[in-house]
Image (tube, rainbow, N blue to C red; front, side, top):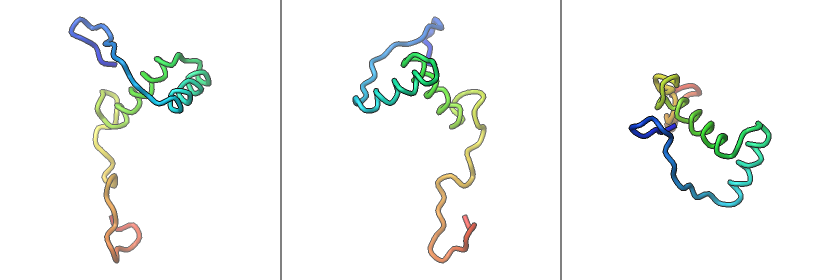
Length: 77
C-alpha cells in the first residue's frame, strides 16, 4: 500500500462502474474482507506478481508477450 512520508496510508477517490463494484463487493464478502481491504489485497497481489513490490517475482516470465511467427514449430518462442 502506498504510504506518505510519515508512513500513513494515502487516500484517493477511485471511480469504478457499478458492475465492477458489485463484483468486488461479492468477492470481498466471500473472503470476509471489506471492499477497501479487498481492493488493497488485489493491488498488492498484482504488484507482487509483476515484481513491482518486494516479495514478488524477480524477473518476468521469458515467454510473456512473445508470439510464434508464421511457420514456427510448436514451442518455438
